Amino acid sequence: MLDVKALTKTFGNNTAVDKVSFKVEKPCMIGIIGRSGAGKSTFLRMVNRLTDASSGELLFEGRNVLELKGRARREWQSDCAMIFQQFNLVPRMDVVSNVLHGTLGKRSTLGTMFNLFTQDEIHKAIDLLERLGIAEHAAKRAEALSGGQQQRVAIARALMQDPKIILADEPIASLDPMNAQTVMEALRRIHEEDGRMVIANLHTLDTARRYCDRIIGMRDGRMVFDGTPAQLTTGVARDIYGADENFSEAATSTEIRDHIHSDEAERLIAKVTV
Ligand SMILES: Nc1ncnc2c1ncn2[C@@H]1O[C@H](COP(=O)(O)OP(=O)(O)OP(=O)(O)O)[C@@H](O)[C@H]1O
Image (cartoon, rainbow, N blue to C red; front, side):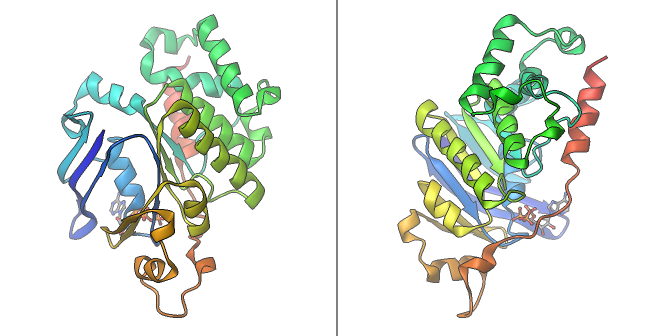
């Protein structure tokens, strides 16, 4: 289904992702772990074509998605929806409109410009909010919701695209443990009920172990582990994080960083709506 072959990204002299190769035969939930700077985000961004790879191949159902251009590239980006740590919602826009903007990649420019959504699209958006347990917030501004609720709005928006793959870049890094659990459970359910593949960059080992079928460990751009949660022993984790015998799993958290994604999303939507 997905065949990653020697995928590489260099920024000047820095090799952010170094010949990463693995195959996924059927939809599963994959967690990517590794310390800050290991190349996890760059890897996901190459899969979704937000960042161009320097070399390598990425075959999905036999087609090298790195070669797609124009409309085909946009269609691929619809097929693999991205979810970010900072949700990337438009804060002052209501929840249901945020979800409806998940159809951006699939609609005509005119429809998008005039915010023309079909009844079916509106029903679908509300159904998705219901499925994620947040339908009662549909009319509120996104900024009025808690972080966990906002991330579920972002998941609903991603599902509007009907993606084959969901790429989640540290989806719970800004959330408290309760909200983190709700979001991870939502992603797991979407994988199990819809058969969608989920690839999530995660910063805590216990989350990867608990929710993922397969875990990939990255260190300095290279893939240094690929196995099941049971195979991810503390010793293996120590290697992935490049730590000594004092390594403790609690120390696998990455700090929360400032992101500009919300501003980026707002600018994008401001450009296409009048
Ligand atoms: N746009 C860019 N320009 C230059 N270097 C970059 C760029 N994006 C990432 N890098 C570098 O590539 C390497 C991998 O970064 P990446 O963000 O993919 O790591 P990560 O594992 O996702 O870390 P984090 O958890 O901190 O986001 C780092 O050395 C980083 O500085």
